[in-house]
Image 1 (tube, rainbow over the protein chains, first blue to last red):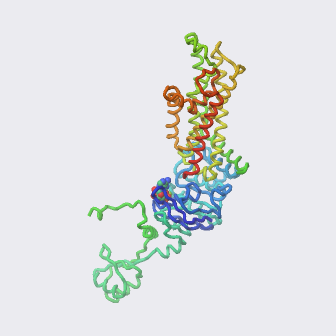
Image 2: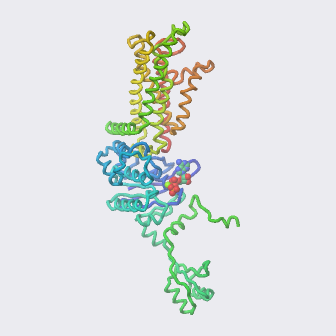
Image 3: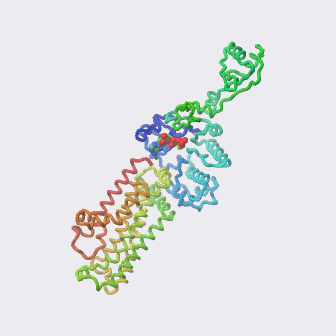
Length: 308
Length: 257
Ligand SMILES: Nc1ncnc2c1ncn2[C@@H]1O[C@H](COP(=O)(O)OP(=O)(O)OP(=O)(O)O)[C@@H](O)[C@H]1O
Ligand SMILES: [Mg+2]
């Protein structure tokens, strides 16, 4: 269990994290979502006591990180930036971490095997690919067999097989009753692994909800309908209390309607239809709607509206 | 802070230090450069001894002469100290280290203790080797460990090597970047301190710089130009080292990793 209360971090005048309060529960994968620069990595560094909060605090199983005895046996983390000396072999890297926390030597071989790095255990990570580096980071996180695991964008740089492996690993860890906290800026990725969701934007909490609830609330559906007689169709729909919105292709989008209802209305008014379909807003779109306006580094497409 | 915990962290730091190549390279360079350059100078002095002025012959210090390589060899010791500490920052390893050992004082203590012990051991070997081989090359002008103050100078030469590495570690904890630490320390100890201690305008203060004061321990013949004795000189260096370590500790405690 990780509890954050009123966690705030400022770098000079810049507020990276502001008043975050939430907890991460055991037994499920909790996704930590936010656009670039939202403050996910900063929050995670504060959870590990690496960055000092400007305000508020983090408790790991009720204690501050610095008060944990042998912290690697409580919580293991894969951080965003590599935290490995490229000139120290994978084995020695794990060995020095294990020794400092009284972790038995046999565990080093176990985690190397778990992440599939046994063959390169005696190699220096400077020759490792992105994916191998990521696996070594995961091995470090798993070293102390901790009850809490934290991964900052673990699928970064992994190939499809690696991504699949990470997903299953996280699910398995959660199924074993562990606390799994994983950040991402891809909603679609989280939809596959996370059961709980914490969304932040510009350092502030935007949502703290179960994945199922988030989907239910945010995956709005609408009906797409097109007719050669658009004005008659509009009248028919508006007459029934619906609010059709004009689409660029000449058709309408009807929020909250269902295809059966729209089809029946058209038949009733004898309006010919060329298209009648369901449009599902993707989770990605739901996420973008939620974080819209909190996006730190927003790209502008084309720039027509600014340049006119 | 229990002993068991401290012992584990010391062991971990020992694993870290022995598992990177830079440790071997820098320490080997410190030894080889100091000894080889000392031998070269001793050989030169023996061959040109008759050309020295009478005053120079009167105040000739065979012990100090065999340590002539220290001025260059110490740079490798400094590099060792910098890489042990700042290497953690440049590689990002510090985040893994602090996650494993969140008590920053304990981590710093263990790292510094292990690295200093190693630097002292190599420093002692270097010092005795430089002396023995240097004296062998000095021929008739040589001295030996039985002469007054010679053992103190040779033992002190080893301490000096350890202390200079320790000083570099303190500075590296403050600056964090290897490049910045090299940029500050190498020119300083290679040139600037020597200039400050020899130009008359700054001489009085320049003699209190860490290397100038500390290296006085390696002199056997008192030329009378220092206002402090050999051990007091080393004491001044120890104060500098303590200040650098304190500064490093404060930075480590306060700043984000
Ligand atoms: N050490 C620092 N000094 C100054 N500003 C910082 C520092 N670390 C982070 N920031 C700023 O804080 C904000 C949050 O950054 P953070 O890296 O936590 O975001 P993130 O959610 O992890 O983003 P991403 O998805 O791109 O990884 C950013 O605007 C960043 O520029
Ligand atoms: Mg990040």
